[in-house]
Length: 414
Image (cartoon, rainbow, N blue to C red; front, top):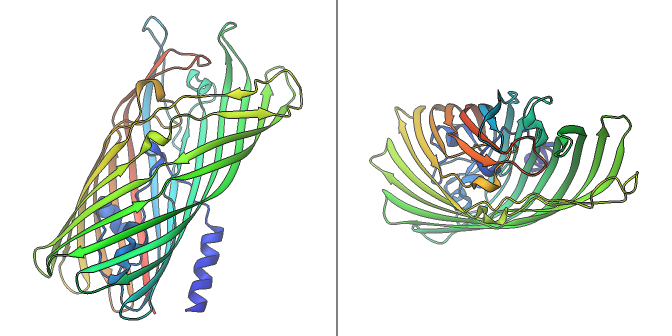
């Protein structure tokens, strides 16, 4: 166990995933099998990624396993900008900035009643980019949130029906925001700004499963909210030349969430999962940044405030898994995400509406190893949002947005 645990610890420490944009920064692509089933994978047998999807289900792992997963996400989309009279003043598209969601998992069965697991995977992350010479750049031309959660977990199986788990979450975020500063009176860009910082914070999770019989099971997972106090560096590059620097500080609260799942086995080969996720996005009410100690006093404002006021939302998923034999299986899934971004809280950091995700996948396994692949298509939908006082537009319309997804996982038993 020690060598395997050390290897996972090093992987978690070095992990710096870059993840393509998603509604509300939420990432659900934690394994190829999970992608294939639309995220409805709370009750998988012998899967180390249960650490991420449902910690109480690591009690379904026999012995000792490690798993790695790599998911490629490529976002695409278009937008139109309008002035105060509703006249279109610009149309464009995002710069395709694909990213990876990387997951590493380790689970060990201690005895017939106890299990230990640990995972390193992104729960919140995003990246978006637009042309630097566009009017959209006055809101944001590059936004990135790198995130990874490390989750040591203890699970206990009470009897044939009940199992439960509790775990800690060490959450890392690295935030970078770039935009052009726009002077609304002069109607011109006065310089580019960059805000860059990182933070570590703690959270926790708890989960429970109950099996009615051999064919029907339910589960619940709760993940706590996590508040980051972000210390960052602020830089401004005026069009007249030079550089102005300042210290920046902001608070970002990542929301708490509930997962409720149901698993039905039709027979030994085929099963169906249903999953509903409630995420309390109302914690993302504003992104306010305070500036202090500027290198050129009197030039920069003391606060850069941006109201968000997102609403709480639901994600629904259904996943089907069929085993053709002891070695080969196929999976399919569908997920629907409600839009959580209000008209007065939208921006080009996360310009997405409701999402529909369609996915398929396949798996091969023998006594020692498992390989799975998956493909997905996310229809991101449209979003209308208002411009801010310092934007070069009064309203925006994002449309024809989609994300291409491809994933591969490898698991090894010891």
